[in-house]
Image (cartoon, rainbow, N blue to C red; front, side, top):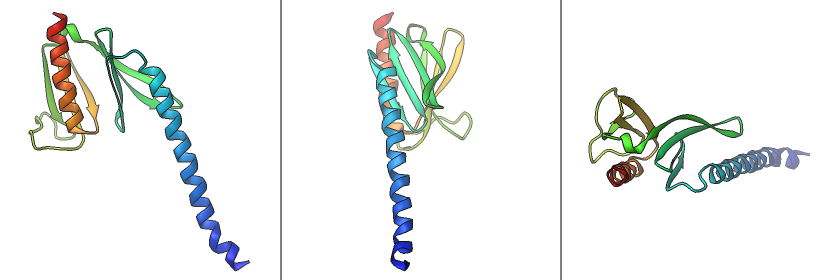
Length: 136
C-alpha cells in the first residue's frame, strides 16, 4: 500500500504533462490551419501573427481557437519601431533580448504587435519594411 502511495504523485505528474502536451499540439495544429497560405507567420507565447495578401493580422489563442486582435495593411506602413514591452515608450536597444513589441505606424494608425523574442521581432521588422517597399 505504501509503495502505491509513493507512485501516485508520479502518475499524476505524468497525466498532467500528457494533457499539457496534447493541448500544445492542438494549438499548433490550429495555428497551421490559421496561417495556411501566409507569407510570414509566427506563433509564440504572446500570440500569433501572419502576413497574408499584404495584410498583417495578429491573434491570441483563447478557448480553443485563434481570436483576431487586429490587422494592418503593409502598403500603408511608414515606420516600424522595436519597443520595450513594459517600459512605456522606450525603444529597445540592439543588445536587448526577450519580450518586446513592434510598433507599426502608417495610415494615421499606431499599432503594437507583441513578440516573445526580440531576435524574431527584428527579423519581422526588416521583412515588413522590405515588403512595404515592394508593394509601393
